[in-house]
Length: 222
Image (cartoon, rainbow, N blue to C red; front, top):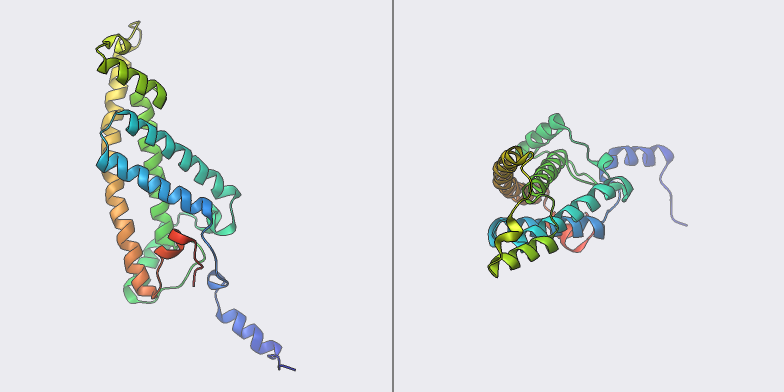
Protein backbone atom coordinates (compact mmCIF):
# COMPACT_ATOMS: atom_id res chain seq x y z
CA UNK A 1 0.00 0.00 0.00
CA UNK A 2 1.35 3.45 -0.92
CA UNK A 3 2.43 5.56 2.02
CA UNK A 4 0.45 8.68 2.68
CA UNK A 5 1.85 12.02 3.75
CA UNK A 6 1.38 13.02 7.37
CA UNK A 7 -1.46 15.47 7.81
CA UNK A 8 0.91 18.28 8.80
CA UNK A 9 3.06 17.70 5.71
CA UNK A 10 0.03 17.63 3.40
CA UNK A 11 -1.29 20.85 4.93
CA UNK A 12 2.07 22.54 4.46
CA UNK A 13 2.19 21.45 0.81
CA UNK A 14 -1.30 22.83 0.25
CA UNK A 15 -0.41 26.13 1.90
CA UNK A 16 2.70 26.46 -0.24
CA UNK A 17 0.59 26.54 -3.41
CA UNK A 18 -1.42 29.79 -3.81
CA UNK A 19 -5.08 29.29 -4.65
CA UNK A 20 -4.48 31.27 -7.85
CA UNK A 21 -2.11 28.53 -9.08
CA UNK A 22 -4.07 25.41 -8.17
CA UNK A 23 -5.43 23.26 -10.97
CA UNK A 24 -5.18 23.60 -14.76
CA UNK A 25 -7.88 25.70 -16.38
CA UNK A 26 -9.25 26.13 -19.90
CA UNK A 27 -10.31 29.27 -21.71
CA UNK A 28 -13.81 28.26 -22.69
CA UNK A 29 -15.14 28.58 -26.27
CA UNK A 30 -17.29 31.65 -25.54
CA UNK A 31 -14.29 33.58 -24.22
CA UNK A 32 -12.17 32.57 -27.19
CA UNK A 33 -14.83 33.26 -29.83
CA UNK A 34 -15.70 36.67 -28.38
CA UNK A 35 -12.01 37.58 -27.96
CA UNK A 36 -10.93 36.73 -31.49
CA UNK A 37 -14.18 37.88 -33.07
CA UNK A 38 -13.83 41.33 -31.53
CA UNK A 39 -10.14 41.39 -32.48
CA UNK A 40 -11.03 40.72 -36.13
CA UNK A 41 -13.76 43.37 -36.07
CA UNK A 42 -11.29 45.97 -34.76
CA UNK A 43 -8.63 44.93 -37.28
CA UNK A 44 -10.91 45.02 -40.32
CA UNK A 45 -12.69 48.25 -39.37
CA UNK A 46 -9.49 50.06 -38.43
CA UNK A 47 -7.15 48.87 -41.17
CA UNK A 48 -8.94 47.20 -44.08
CA UNK A 49 -12.35 48.85 -44.34
CA UNK A 50 -13.58 52.35 -45.10
CA UNK A 51 -15.61 53.97 -42.35
CA UNK A 52 -19.31 54.49 -42.96
CA UNK A 53 -19.65 51.72 -45.54
CA UNK A 54 -22.01 48.77 -45.28
CA UNK A 55 -19.24 46.37 -44.24
CA UNK A 56 -18.02 48.79 -41.57
CA UNK A 57 -21.49 49.11 -40.07
CA UNK A 58 -22.11 45.35 -40.31
CA UNK A 59 -18.88 44.58 -38.48
CA UNK A 60 -19.80 47.17 -35.87
CA UNK A 61 -23.07 45.38 -35.17
CA UNK A 62 -21.27 42.03 -35.00
CA UNK A 63 -18.83 43.58 -32.54
CA UNK A 64 -21.72 44.83 -30.40
CA UNK A 65 -23.21 41.34 -30.31
CA UNK A 66 -19.88 39.80 -29.31
CA UNK A 67 -19.28 42.43 -26.63
CA UNK A 68 -22.78 41.86 -25.24
CA UNK A 69 -22.13 38.11 -25.22
CA UNK A 70 -18.86 38.59 -23.30
CA UNK A 71 -20.64 40.89 -20.82
CA UNK A 72 -23.30 38.25 -20.15
CA UNK A 73 -20.62 35.56 -19.90
CA UNK A 74 -18.85 37.68 -17.29
CA UNK A 75 -21.75 36.87 -14.97
CA UNK A 76 -22.93 33.48 -16.25
CA UNK A 77 -19.75 31.81 -17.49
CA UNK A 78 -17.25 29.55 -15.70
CA UNK A 79 -15.20 30.89 -12.80
CA UNK A 80 -12.19 32.08 -14.84
CA UNK A 81 -14.42 34.01 -17.27
CA UNK A 82 -16.40 35.89 -14.61
CA UNK A 83 -15.65 39.49 -13.75
CA UNK A 84 -15.24 38.48 -10.11
CA UNK A 85 -12.14 36.47 -11.11
CA UNK A 86 -10.32 39.57 -12.37
CA UNK A 87 -11.74 42.81 -10.90
CA UNK A 88 -10.12 46.07 -12.04
CA UNK A 89 -7.48 46.91 -9.41
CA UNK A 90 -5.07 49.66 -10.52
CA UNK A 91 -2.86 49.34 -7.44
CA UNK A 92 -2.56 45.57 -7.89
CA UNK A 93 -1.80 46.13 -11.59
CA UNK A 94 1.10 48.43 -10.73
CA UNK A 95 2.36 45.91 -8.19
CA UNK A 96 2.20 43.19 -10.83
CA UNK A 97 4.24 45.29 -13.27
CA UNK A 98 6.80 45.84 -10.51
CA UNK A 99 6.96 42.09 -9.91
CA UNK A 100 7.39 41.57 -13.65
CA UNK A 101 10.35 43.92 -13.65
CA UNK A 102 11.90 42.06 -10.70
CA UNK A 103 11.21 38.65 -12.21
CA UNK A 104 9.05 37.62 -9.25
CA UNK A 105 5.75 36.86 -10.94
CA UNK A 106 2.96 34.69 -9.57
CA UNK A 107 0.49 32.78 -11.71
CA UNK A 108 -3.23 33.40 -11.93
CA UNK A 109 -6.14 31.22 -12.95
CA UNK A 110 -7.62 34.09 -14.94
CA UNK A 111 -6.13 37.42 -16.03
CA UNK A 112 -3.37 38.90 -13.93
CA UNK A 113 -4.13 42.37 -12.47
CA UNK A 114 -2.41 44.25 -15.32
CA UNK A 115 -4.12 42.11 -17.95
CA UNK A 116 -7.46 42.58 -16.21
CA UNK A 117 -7.08 46.36 -16.24
CA UNK A 118 -6.22 46.24 -19.93
CA UNK A 119 -9.27 44.08 -20.65
CA UNK A 120 -11.60 46.56 -18.95
CA UNK A 121 -9.96 49.48 -20.76
CA UNK A 122 -10.40 47.75 -24.13
CA UNK A 123 -14.03 46.89 -23.38
CA UNK A 124 -14.77 50.46 -22.30
CA UNK A 125 -13.25 51.85 -25.50
CA UNK A 126 -15.16 49.31 -27.59
CA UNK A 127 -18.42 50.36 -25.93
CA UNK A 128 -17.58 54.02 -26.60
CA UNK A 129 -16.72 53.33 -30.25
CA UNK A 130 -19.93 51.40 -30.78
CA UNK A 131 -22.12 53.96 -29.01
CA UNK A 132 -20.70 56.83 -31.05
CA UNK A 133 -21.03 54.72 -34.20
CA UNK A 134 -24.74 54.28 -33.49
CA UNK A 135 -25.11 58.03 -33.04
CA UNK A 136 -23.30 58.72 -36.30
CA UNK A 137 -25.50 56.30 -38.26
CA UNK A 138 -28.69 57.21 -36.46
CA UNK A 139 -28.97 53.62 -35.28
CA UNK A 140 -29.59 52.37 -38.82
CA UNK A 141 -29.18 48.65 -39.35
CA UNK A 142 -26.63 47.28 -41.84
CA UNK A 143 -29.50 46.37 -44.19
CA UNK A 144 -30.79 49.93 -44.16
CA UNK A 145 -27.31 51.34 -44.77
CA UNK A 146 -26.84 48.93 -47.69
CA UNK A 147 -30.14 50.05 -49.23
CA UNK A 148 -29.23 53.72 -48.91
CA UNK A 149 -25.74 53.20 -50.35
CA UNK A 150 -27.19 51.24 -53.27
CA UNK A 151 -29.74 53.99 -53.94
CA UNK A 152 -27.05 56.68 -53.87
CA UNK A 153 -24.85 54.62 -56.18
CA UNK A 154 -27.81 54.44 -58.59
CA UNK A 155 -28.17 58.22 -58.49
CA UNK A 156 -31.11 58.48 -56.08
CA UNK A 157 -29.97 60.97 -53.45
CA UNK A 158 -33.47 61.41 -52.04
CA UNK A 159 -32.83 58.69 -49.44
CA UNK A 160 -30.39 61.05 -47.73
CA UNK A 161 -32.82 63.97 -47.53
CA UNK A 162 -34.05 64.56 -43.99
CA UNK A 163 -37.62 65.70 -43.51
CA UNK A 164 -38.43 68.19 -40.78
CA UNK A 165 -36.21 70.86 -39.25
CA UNK A 166 -36.84 70.37 -35.54
CA UNK A 167 -33.58 69.64 -33.78
CA UNK A 168 -31.69 69.33 -37.06
CA UNK A 169 -28.83 71.62 -36.03
CA UNK A 170 -28.53 69.95 -32.64
CA UNK A 171 -28.51 66.55 -34.34
CA UNK A 172 -25.75 67.60 -36.70
CA UNK A 173 -23.70 68.91 -33.79
CA UNK A 174 -24.15 65.68 -31.85
CA UNK A 175 -23.14 63.57 -34.84
CA UNK A 176 -20.07 65.73 -35.43
CA UNK A 177 -19.01 65.41 -31.80
CA UNK A 178 -19.69 61.66 -31.90
CA UNK A 179 -17.56 61.36 -35.04
CA UNK A 180 -14.61 63.08 -33.37
CA UNK A 181 -14.86 60.89 -30.28
CA UNK A 182 -15.26 57.82 -32.49
CA UNK A 183 -12.04 58.54 -34.36
CA UNK A 184 -10.04 59.30 -31.21
CA UNK A 185 -11.28 56.16 -29.47
CA UNK A 186 -10.51 54.07 -32.57
CA UNK A 187 -6.93 55.40 -32.61
CA UNK A 188 -6.51 54.83 -28.88
CA UNK A 189 -7.78 51.26 -28.99
CA UNK A 190 -5.15 50.38 -31.59
CA UNK A 191 -2.45 51.68 -29.23
CA UNK A 192 -3.87 49.62 -26.38
CA UNK A 193 -4.04 46.54 -28.59
CA UNK A 194 -0.33 46.90 -29.39
CA UNK A 195 0.45 47.29 -25.68
CA UNK A 196 -1.70 44.25 -24.93
CA UNK A 197 0.14 42.11 -27.49
CA UNK A 198 3.51 43.31 -26.17
CA UNK A 199 2.43 42.55 -22.60
CA UNK A 200 1.42 39.00 -23.50
CA UNK A 201 4.78 38.44 -25.20
CA UNK A 202 6.79 39.84 -22.28
CA UNK A 203 4.86 37.90 -19.65
CA UNK A 204 5.02 34.68 -21.66
CA UNK A 205 8.78 35.01 -21.69
CA UNK A 206 8.94 35.87 -17.98
CA UNK A 207 6.75 32.91 -16.97
CA UNK A 208 8.35 30.51 -19.42
CA UNK A 209 5.00 29.47 -20.91
CA UNK A 210 2.94 30.45 -23.93
CA UNK A 211 0.01 32.58 -22.78
CA UNK A 212 -1.35 32.87 -26.31
CA UNK A 213 -1.83 29.14 -26.95
CA UNK A 214 -4.73 28.63 -24.50
CA UNK A 215 -6.61 31.55 -26.08
CA UNK A 216 -6.08 30.08 -29.53
CA UNK A 217 -6.87 26.43 -28.96
CA UNK A 218 -8.29 26.28 -25.46
CA UNK A 219 -5.24 24.38 -24.20
CA UNK A 220 -4.73 23.92 -20.51
CA UNK A 221 -2.94 26.53 -18.46
CA UNK A 222 0.23 25.22 -16.91
